[in-house]
Length: 161
Ligand code: 5CA
Image (cartoon, rainbow, N blue to C red):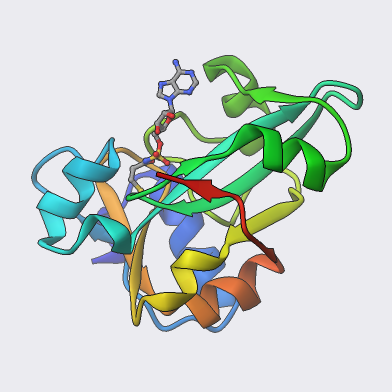
């Protein structure tokens, strides 16, 4: 029930509705902080979990969002090439400031400010995927095509095992 969602999850839920996505934010009884925990909570393959990872463009001090499957890691050399400059993993404070959410619950949309977003091509092989909804116990289910549409992401090959 939407009425039971916390502020962060409620923001994501409202953003999904505003964007025309018919997906309900689910609050799980257990932690969904990591991709492994999230996959276990909804009993899906880890490849169906969307990790919303924040990087920092060192030159521009700008946040960059990368959506990659739970089965993959981001190849930082490739990402740097795509972005066109040095990048680094964002720390917790930077993530919270730029997205409005804490690590473990960062959603792929509904951020403090619009973030340049890259979606790894492997996610498009799944029929449905699950993403964090603002907290480390909430998730929502979406087709990769809808995820691409609502995030205005650029599809890239940025994953490694
Ligand atoms: N809710 C889950 C599944 S959707 C989730 O948010 N997974 S995640 O992968 O997108 O977010 C957790 C990620 O945050 C980890 O993969 C890890 O790379 C990163 N992380 C964890 N702790 C830190 C930290 N202290 N600083 C920077 N990144 C961190």
